[in-house]
Image (cartoon, rainbow, N blue to C red; front, top):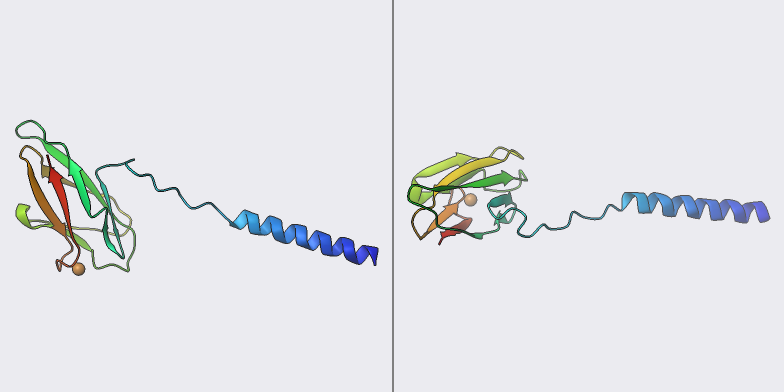
Length: 122
Ligand SMILES: [Cu+2]
């Protein structure tokens, strides 16, 4: 009887240890950690709206796009105003340089213009 109870306690202990070992805390969202990074998710571009500081004449800002899933329509990022289209390979950061010497709003979107997002230069 006692042996059985011990065995049961041991099993419970092992089970709880295993469970806690599996429970990895989700990565905390690093808000603002990278103000020029955009992720292409199954919900579109995240964040869908960003702002960059206007710079000196001729200056540019590099935005980094990373597609995190195959379950998205955002296989490319398109900047219509800049006539720029860049393919987004899965989990490969892609740098896009945009002009930042003029205050304006630039749209960026997926290849079919479903996911519309914007970057404001100001
Ligand atoms: Cu689309």
